[in-house]
Length: 332
Image: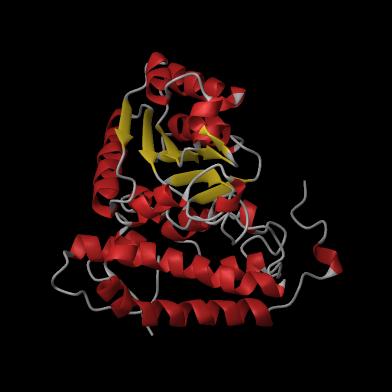
């Protein structure tokens, strides 16, 4: 069945498949964003279902609760704009247009995966749609984003590059070097801090003696802060303005979006028994989460999304594992 979200821009139309009817009590803009976020959540909930079977061949870092950041950040990016992000990568991979069947195949370690079974969950890439790479090493893709922005400037490409990272990455030296270099060379890069306030089990206030915005501002960066990281429309509109600014000025910008992850740092389970956070804060975020609050809209969209997911899972399960000759392919 052909798929489009009504009103979607041509360059973003491949970020889902199927045809959905928009419930007229919701705006078209909200419904499109809601669909993309719900798709990501249902994909990750299916991963949770499948994980105990041991068919998935890598650890998984889930973005459940954080979907609005990826969906909003990618809405107005062009296919030629580039995104570099973290090991918590499923949401950005899908929001930027990565192929779902190839993502599941990659999780299963199959040769039909987006990295031919070698990358797993933490190293997804879809360069054909501008998702350039993710990494398990904290902060390591930030300089990659800056390098890509430098290349775009020198080659005269009309590209915006987005480097996505968590609050913990700002404690790494390469983060500071990257901000400094981007400002000095006036590069078209968005530094997007997806701030869930946690680095594994450590809260931000236990790790950082500096203010993220003030620190970024000290390098001469324009800074933006959005506390409502659950608000699909507000995130999308904020990022749209920022992307438009960078595309026009060809200079870097820093943005911090507050968000919250529902699951443990790595894996499909809960972790409240660890004592570093309380269920009350989780419930407070869920009360503002549109995917939790608009169940009628979710139920309207669910069948088409689940059909796509099950087809992708079947593709992954029925695909072959890499043959021995794949071992050194693409290794340099």
